[in-house]
Amino acid sequence: MNWFWYYLLFQICIIIFFWIFSKRKDKRYKINNTLTEDFEPTQEVSIDPVSKVLKRVYVNRNTGERKYIDEKGENDHNRKRK
Image (cartoon, rainbow, N blue to C red; front, side, top):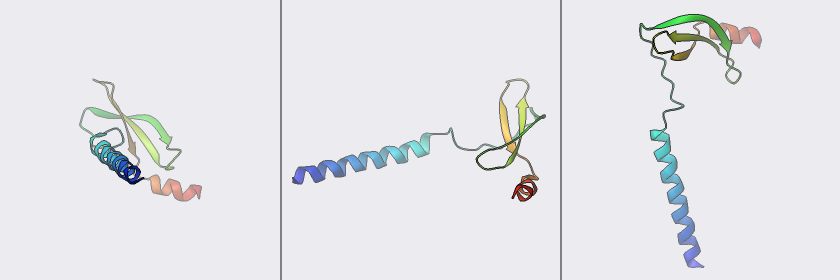
């Protein structure tokens, strides 16, 4: 029965190791709100359904990359909805 506890501890250590490793290496959910001069604002504005924040779309016409940036007046919009 003693081997079971060693095995369980080993599995927990492996899970924690891979969880920490993936947090450091996974860049999908890191927000990069830096805009260069290539990005132009569009007329496309939406409200994020999770955070209820007003977002404007900026697009790079050369690459087609899109970034969703919080509008400056999003707090005013949230107060009106509450």
